[in-house]
Image (cartoon, rainbow over all chains, first blue to last red; front, side):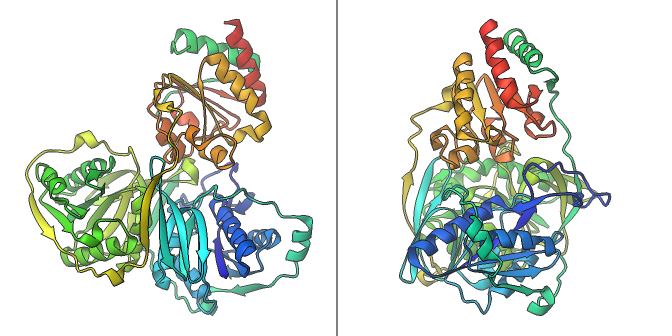
Length: 256
Length: 323
């Protein structure tokens, strides 16, 4: 089974974010980056399928040069090879991003494409579904389990309020995977060593023949949210802060 | 120009977010000085359409087809694309449900558009609609506008608009029969299953102590358990903790877990991603303990301690015992 896993590189979770002078995005200098966690789960699902069924896992990533780090991590965890669309994609809307991914996927004819549910930077949660539509593939999202058989898959899709549903579809198909589908593995030393000799195909929008298109949604301005609630904050010595808080909870809020 | 609200039902029952979307559509239409219509898709949905006929809407489009009885992304996309192509609404609004997340990007792509998903608020200035959504797990806000011609698509976050603001009135019901054939549908939905039986009813808890990634390791959970015991509180967690198997899924608070409204909700090492906040913002008193003073959880907290939870929590247990 040939599996492509689309991953995105995003600012690390605990980053202190500052707004860029342009007010159009965050300040990117000095930020640490990591694989978008939902995509790490998609990769985990792909590696598990390969271990069960045999085949190949290809990591696919669109991003500037620094995204090479995310690709190396995916290879170290067990992806067999990678495709790096080397473009600064921060300003792209999800349709433009998916067009790049679709162009890179063509010619690979995968059986299955996996993506995370959403990115932790933009959080639009659309790229996977758009990619399926552009490639003419059936899809499903919020996937908790995947079972593959000859030419078809059965997945478990999470619904709201504790419900889930099994869905069958023919291959090739695309799945947007829910976080928590399996415990994430770490790269082993052996994996990191092996990754160095694995193939990374580097392409660009131009080499893929994807012309830039006018975006249909525009980020006008980004800003830090205003506090809507007045929070009484206790800082400094933990003992003192704890005593003050307990006092407030007992005599002001009267909840304990 | 007109606004279309696409509402969600399953087996004849409204999704609770449907009327939030209708309220938003009525408000936005009023601000843009235009009309609002509503659509609902399914099979034998006459009763639902009639319910909408008593709202202040121009036309209720009831999409009736036996291939719409069970949701599939293929049938929903095809049915709505045909309709939108024909009636050309300028703005189409959806509730940001799991189902909408599954087909809205596909529908927008089919019509060569990009949807703005998970919108938290909007404003209209000089007849121009600006949508507000959150980036970086709620740490940053963004103003977003559509460019180019409609139809423009957006989905609205749970709780962003109030369902009780829907205005009553009178609407005409029009039954739409989309052109669908079984060969259009590639996915086969099977039976629905209820995963967790919610044997723990967090919804009834008076006090909840909840923890998140800040706990770092499952070995540290007994510390939180001690605090919960001292407070007489139920233990809960954010999604990543339950994903990791550190607490059972039934103790998860958030959009994919339980919605709670205790007298006191104490969030420890939880940054407060929006998926978590929607599950607990009904709490009367919110307490946050986090090392990051900029964590979004402090935006909804009444009381907070900025500090290392491994120092603060033992101090809290001590202080409660003394009290």
